[in-house]
Image (cartoon, rainbow, N blue to C red):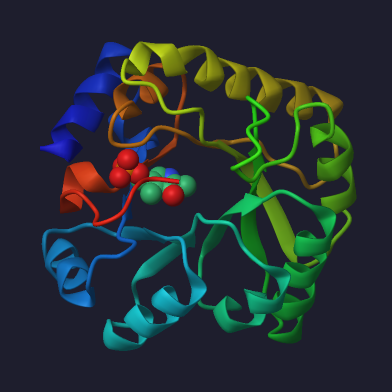
Length: 224
Ligand SMILES: *Cc1c(COP(=O)(O)O)cnc(C)c1O
């Protein structure tokens, strides 16, 4: 079972298992599958698509903790304002400004992670590591956002060990941001690790692992 594997990986790394939270990635899976996982005690669900998230949230109890983990278009932010507890995929100032505006209109504050594209893959979102510090500095000035840490999605490898340097690099970047001492910026959360490599990510310091297919079964389409 995934929870046990997470706990074991944390203990092997000398970490408290409670310091690693499981984000159940439920994209493309029906609300019924989420309801079942809720019954089993799963708390956090990760979704990639705004329309899908909004539709499923309407079918499920109000207390579900939703994390948005996919590429997010500015013009869709309004639809998820106040609905999601964290956005993992903030990678540009224009998006951060729109989140700030929409949450601010509700009198609320949104927890966010800055996504870093460590391998500079054109098909993926995320800021470059060179641009990270400037982006964090700019986003930190927005009143209705709280920067909680970093997120990354390394290139796909068959061997999970191949992803390890990327996880280690993200942790290193979080240390650099922390050392910059920007007011209001926390680097406590590292969102990294998916079905194939979450144990390696935990060994490298992940606090949020995003696991989809290993929990819910394979999806109908190819991973992005
Ligand atoms: C789909 C997705 C996941 C989960 O992938 P699995 O390999 O099914 O665990 C994690 N993170 C992001 C950003 C995703 O899009």
